[in-house]
Image (cartoon, rainbow, N blue to C red; front, side):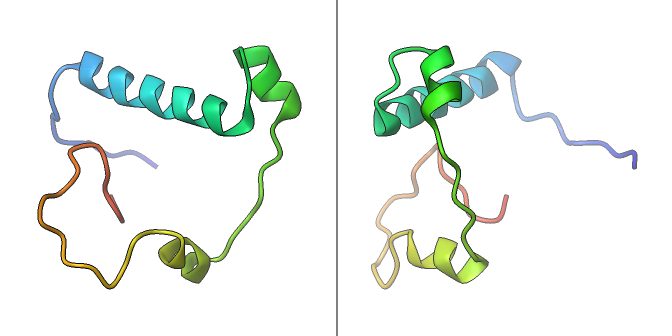
Amino acid sequence: IEGRVAYKGPLGNLVYQLVGGLRSAMGYVGAADIAALKRDTRFVRITAAGLRESHPHDVTITREAPNYQIGG
């Protein structure tokens, strides 16, 4: 499959977001480094309905988070 994605700004912005997510995940599992994250992490599959339920809902959003999107 081949396609294009519209320009979304400098690559550094994306890398910054990815590093933030990685640090957050490491904090959740208590991993001090990447090796510990790889060794000690267990992934759990959830349904689409479970994913929707795991996020805030039934609230009025007053300001969208700059680093959070549902459905890309």
